[in-house]
Image (cartoon, rainbow, N blue to C red):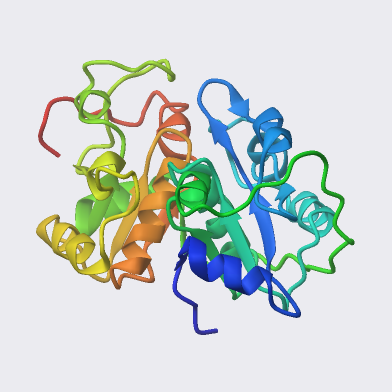
Length: 278
């Protein structure tokens, strides 16, 4: 199935919401360490947007890794509860850091939805454009989405190690975490040997929005991007935003190591790299 462009601008979304059959909007505001921010959604969201809890709806219980793939039946039920259908476009949004929105975008694609876009710049861009918010609960009509796993490329630990050795594996965490100088979340610091550091923050402009596609492509090519490329982070959330950026830049087959660093370190036999070099 041909994929649609992974981003939608606020003004384009506003026009789509005014159409006869508007897209489903999923609000996925989430941050570490606090988690899902349902209170912020209640206080103000895009009109009609349903709330998806990243920890509950977009991930399985921790172990191995902090945010493993959700059970297909659980994900399907959550998306149906949010009003998602298989033949109706979906737009995902968050506060503006692209983390929650990208995780939902990636998962919907993985589970077979072919028309999903993330709101470029999230709610921050929406409000900056002077577009309206509503408050309070949203109870969509139940959707009929059917989860069919396998729509996107996934890496396990062995696959990540192989890609780091023979292709390009991007570690999208901050440079200090990659070098092993600090680790505020997981019990072991460092990186997968062979992985190249590509902090997610370097892919955004001063306004927090992803850089234009040609600039993203230039940066990824400088990192050696080609047909065999994948990404990981701490638990597979931030790296989903990098996979989205890769698709925007023309690398649609990029793989995600869903377990990421929090899965890698569960086996003490796996090597740990430190320092600035792969």
